[in-house]
Image (cartoon, rainbow, N blue to C red; front, side, top):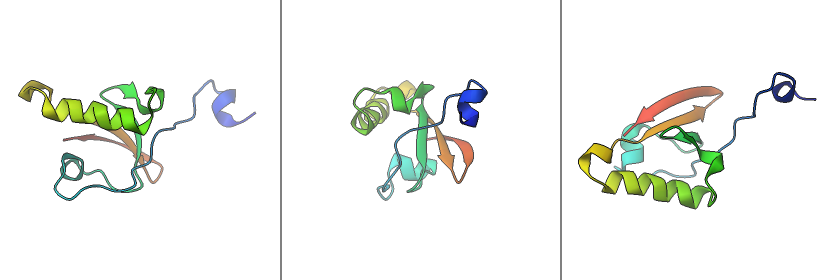
Amino acid sequence: MNDHNRFGMQPIAGPIVRYVDYASPAQIAGVLPGDMIVEIDGTPANTLPGGSEDLVKAVSRHISGPSSERIVVLRIRRNREELILKN
C-alpha cells in the first residue's frame, strides 16, 4: 500500500504543459512547460472528461467571456511545489 492510500489521500494528477505560447494569458500568468495543471477554478483537471482538450476549452471559455469571467485560477504543481496562478 502506498502512502497516498494509507492516509486516505488521492495522488495528485493532471495534464502536463508541453509548451506555452509567447505573450499568451498562460505565459503572462507564469505557466511554464513541465507544469502539471492540478485544478482550474477549483475543478480538478483530471476529472475533465475530455482530458487536456476540455482543459483548453475551459480556459478559452473564461478568457473569451465577459470581463468578469476573464480571471482563471490555476493550481499547478512545479518541482514538487504547488502554486496558485491567475491570469
